[in-house]
Length: 274
Image (cartoon, rainbow, N blue to C red):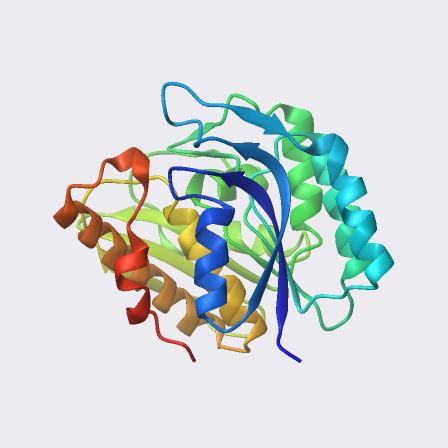
């Protein structure tokens, strides 16, 4: 049977983020991508105007039909969740549709650059922390990692020992694999890779171009597909970070606006399928 990942995230018609990114990347990597929409947007909220249809009150009905089909998944991957209700629905989904062999990947999309998103209340942060506790793999950026580990965020240099302590605190919640992304190190951007039973690693890539919407979704999609395909975690992180860099470089070459995300479509063939 072909492997399947349920991807619980929003669907934006324009702007290359969330499911619009996960579906083609996961599919290219040989895994069936099965979306569970949390909201439908005309375009992501980084644009000056947008239409949004919150899907919370229909998620249970949607999921119930999968229940009737008796579906099971090799992976369950989550992205941005906008309410505690959605988090509770996702927790129930993991309990029901997962299993011993199901890999759970949680991207705790809560904020960036030291600030949480405006929608993220204390209650919502605690809910996300509980959801991370159900994950096998989690992919927080530095801001999110600090929040999950109850550590004060700061600008500047982060030492290996500090990053290890943060990763260990997150791992103590439940996940056996943690990658802290987007750590600035001079001319490099680093990812701290922590896996229980293995030596932690720092994987760095040279900075390339400006920050863009959807790069985190590209990264987590590669991690999710590789995870169910059994690719070693450190190798997957190296692949994902390298591919994100290529996507940014190509988008800058094409003059793509930052809000439009990265034109990964043109270089998808460069993403190695292990």
